[in-house]
Image 1 (tube, rainbow, N blue to C red):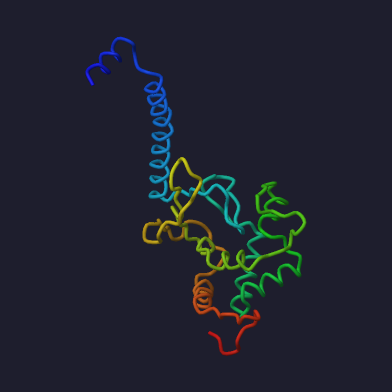
Image 2 (cartoon, rainbow, N blue to C red; image 1 turned 90 degrees about the horizontal axis):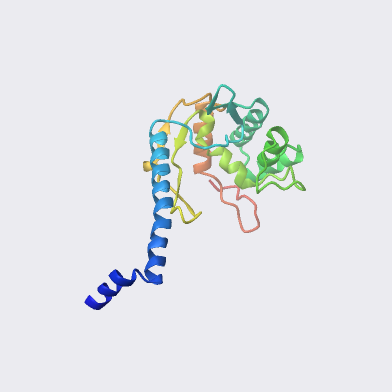
Length: 211
């Protein structure tokens, strides 16, 4: 109203107005900063710059270029063994049991021992307890044939830590981005096996006719 407008001009904004303006100003800066960061990341993704700060298991940072990765000889041999066992007919659960029996450190434990890099999922009491999920992820990760995939995930908002999966058609793929650990022929065989993987019964056993 005219009276309220006159009161604002003569007496200044109310405490409620000041609080609203302050909240808007405080929110503006982080929002714009988030937009600038996202734009920079998007540009890097388009140009094939590796965004992930931690290399996948089997790789390590290139000493000469922090944006590139090179095979980690010790862990790369474990990755090759996982693929070999899959081609031989073993599923992720069976492979995980073999790795645990051989006392091969899980990726989080290995990263801690070799690089001093800790992870929230690391369990010092179970350093060899491989899971079928970890094995399955390794078997399906295109990094191992030298294919770099950018923009796999995206944060919903700068206000939230929630991360969503980006559809494959919106991801950026770069072939021969770095030295592969697995031959493409072996990769294709494993992907075919994974697509037709057997389904366990309720007792956790495989039907002899499954797949």
